[in-house]
Length: 111
Image (cartoon, rainbow, N blue to C red; front, side, top):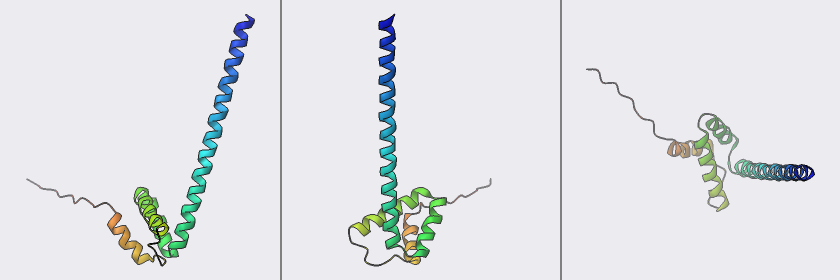
């Protein structure tokens, strides 16, 4: 009986240690995600005028995937040195027009 209890106790300790490692890994991943998000915000703050930044925030509410794609594109351009001035609201509108998915026209045919 003592051997069985010892095996159970050891197994329980192993499971607890594994759970602890998993929790630590999740915390590291969350911290890394927060750091990356903070860096993205800092870069966007540096390259976007306030009106453009607000527009991008509103687009994120309606179309998060489009906003993410545009943000990543702008960050890549900024990091490669291809953006040499702040992006205005008008320029952002043009970028968004190209990035937004095309709307499908719905036609109703009556017979």
